[in-house]
Image: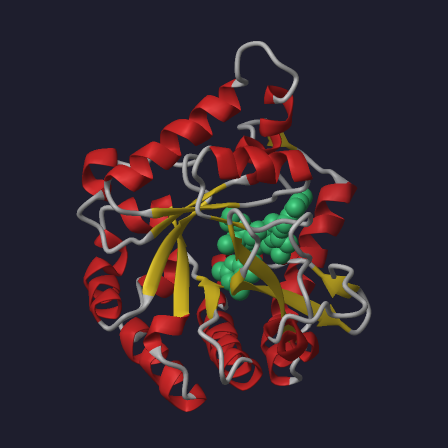
Length: 289
Ligand code: C2E
Ligand code: MG
Ligand code: MG
Ligand code: MG
């Protein structure tokens, strides 16, 4: 069995690779039934204001509670689901569940829920109606939903359902660009997009600790500084991701970063704990999962 490997080499036969391939195949073949059985669930990570750490919203992060393999994080199955197209029904399930759990858990709050969308979802003709139905079914106002898209979803030549996103944004849904600065954004084009927030990825944020040690600011700090200024210049807000230390939160506040999330600010909570989170009580059993 010859197969073109990722690095452009030809591999004749590699039992480990064959085993991995068949494990991937088994996992992807399993997904539709797993969805039926309710094995895909969400956890929610707080997004807080800086400074002060007031809770503003939560990002929904999908997990697969696999009966044999245990709790699988998205990097074990999202790419697979994207390859097979299963990401579309899975993404629809995530949207509905996130809207419903947000509406149920925060009836008296303005908290928003932030949902990750894959490129394939943004290219579905039914995107606007899917989201509209999820909101109506849950009784959640559009203003309390944020969608997270990657740069490639927004900047792709297809326009990536750009018209759909405009319709959604006109209806009050917020749009964030996830992992901003890791793709190929057209900065001139950015201001014309229906986008409200830039989310800065963890590697940029991790570099902020070095800046504390004095001397010239680390290059990551200069990047964060520049991106916050850019965002504010075109009326966007900035969310820092992966904040793991007090020092990072401090630097981000000083740089004018609007909102943040990360283990220092709060782990991802199961839906049962959201109600307590909303009323400002620290939830018990707060470990991320
Ligand atoms: P993302 O949207 O950038 O999500 C942030 C990831 O960073 C999450 O990993 C979160 O658990 C993790 N994280 C949060 N705070 C910290 C921290 O302080 N330190 C570190 N080291 N990590 C932190 P997770 O849940 O494993 O998700 C990984 C990626 O999977 C997400 O990245 C997103 O791209 C994708 N994903 C998650 N849920 C969904 C979904 O429902 N649909 C789609 N299409 N993609 C999803
Ligand atoms: Mg995200
Ligand atoms: Mg991401
Ligand atoms: Mg991200």
